[in-house]
Image 1 (tube, rainbow, N blue to C red):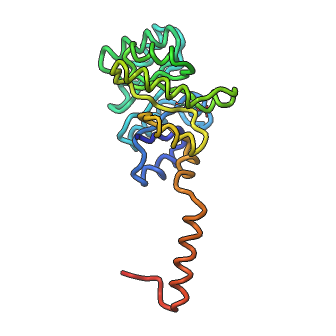
Image 2: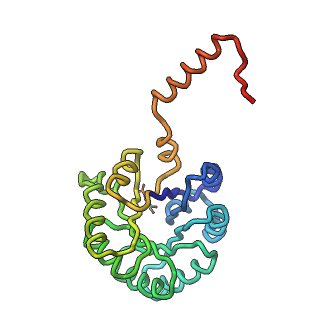
Length: 219
Ligand code: E4P
């Protein structure tokens, strides 16, 4: 399973890139606005830090302008994935760009029917938003299971990129269901490392060592 960071915060991306666990980055207009930097400069900088796919989202909603934006974004770096919304115009652009070999991430997916359309439009990634469905009292993970079944049934190679991830359980459940990618805020990636018994076990091991009076040094 691939891990993407869902952020436009350069410091965080640099920090977690050093872990060797970050396979890509997703951004959206809200994340870039929150970060405060210039849109294009931010995308280029991220694409220079992480060699894997970096999703940059179009701002236009009409197909003609969206396609122009998509082609421009794709030209910024080889690892840019153009992100388009799951709308009639967005899927039209997805098909046009995908036919030209440009990777497209179709975002704001909330149903299996939408995911089926995105795969037929040649999307490299489909982004179902599990957290926002959970917020409504629906099951985000049921959607992931349904998309997995449909994509496997027809051998679609669109990757399921689980988005709107809010906690480590979302990541684990997505992995159990065979999702291809989870994109997560840095704080969720940090959560994945944590277990209180790990912290306690390590403290106990070191306390036992310290009780010997010897230095904590091997090399
Ligand atoms: C995915 O690409 C989106 O940027 C993101 O996961 C949205 O998550 P949110 O529901 O926490 O805003």
